[in-house]
Amino acid sequence: MSTKSSVSTFFLAAGAFAGGVITGLMLAPKSGRESREWIHNQADEVADWVDSQGKKAVHDAEERVRHLKEDVEGNLKKNFPDLYEATQDFGLREEELVNERDDE
Image (cartoon, rainbow, N blue to C red; front, side, top):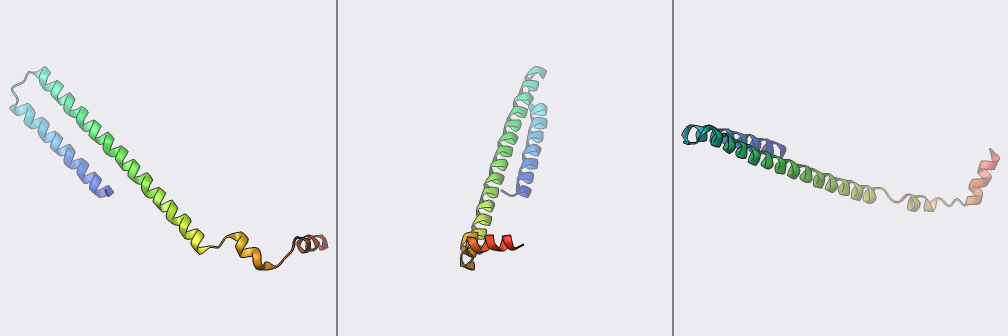
């Protein structure tokens, strides 16, 4: 789910919640105490939904980062040869390297 879609869904749900609260308060023949309990329950439901959507967004982002990391690692391995393999054909022996260092 894209960020734009998530934000749109959030505002749609918040608007529906607010509309439901207003309609419920105007039409329900409940006492003030019952209305407050109902509002509290509805707010808890919205909070739970927002929490679950946040966790889902974090999980999705972590998955995307994991896939991106795997793609980058795969491309690096494919496009850049192993350093040992790349230097294997230089033909330098350890003695030559040591002698070169001693000459300095």
